[in-house]
Image 1 (cartoon, rainbow, N blue to C red):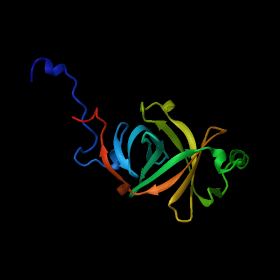
Image 2 (image 1 turned 180 degrees about the vertical axis):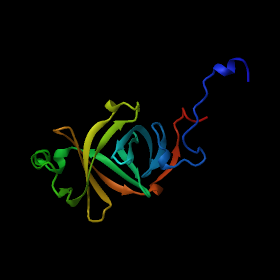
Image 3 (image 1 turned 135 degrees about the vertical axis):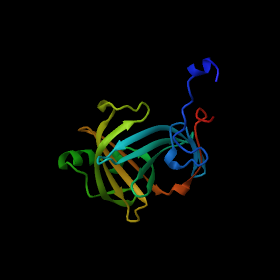
Image 4 (image 1 turned 120 degrees about the vertical axis):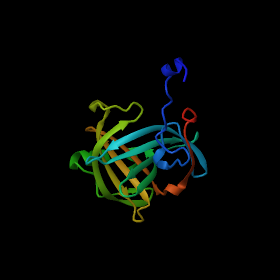
Length: 189
């Protein structure tokens, strides 16, 4: 070690095993293959559902399409891929219904399929771009998940504040659906 080597910044060790990268290791800048396309992780988000239960979401961009990969883990890994849709595409009166009844309807119909309310999850959300321990980094929200009768298709309705709503639809996917997961070029040693 030279005299000036002491002042050099040490390269941060990756938080994953570089010889065995899995879907759990995803971070912004990673690339992966899914559905015959290569996707780049453009953003990373975190949800705090209480009772020390967290989940993560990744914005994936293939160049011609954007999807969101939601990853949660309890006893096993649970993954969904979804696309954002306008809340009024689900039901033009849905925001008013939720405001009036303080909850969404028990079922929704989207693109000819019936989806049934499965769970309500109040929680907090933060963009992982600049994670910090400050309370103001987290936004309060509530999420309602609906599944079709096969439990393979999912609709999600989220409420942010009093009158702001978002919706997405997608499907449950297996970890085997993803391959060739590589870190960002800045992490490659």
